[in-house]
Amino acid sequence: MENKLDGNAAAGTLQEIFPFEMTLAQVTCTGCGTTNVIGATAAYMHGMGTIVRCPVCDTVLIRVVHARGRYWLDMRGVRVLEISVEA
Image (cartoon, rainbow, N blue to C red; front, side, top):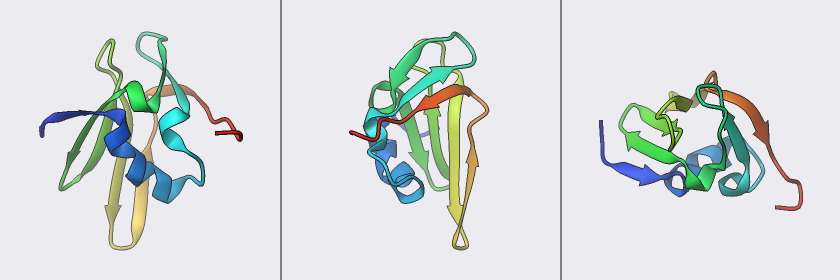
């Protein structure tokens, strides 16, 4: 696994998918129930894609792969994704 970054590093990839400011979007972890803004999560970025993990319990929240003009998005670690339209 590549070096651990903060969730702001994943914002560019998520911004390509969602038309919102994703660093301020809140995610609730299915593992421990903690809610954090994506900017406060842990991100791992490498050639195969981006992994966003809970900073408390290390559960994988989001997996993103971008290949051949498509995105694959796995959010099974996110119980709730809250996006503010004011952000």
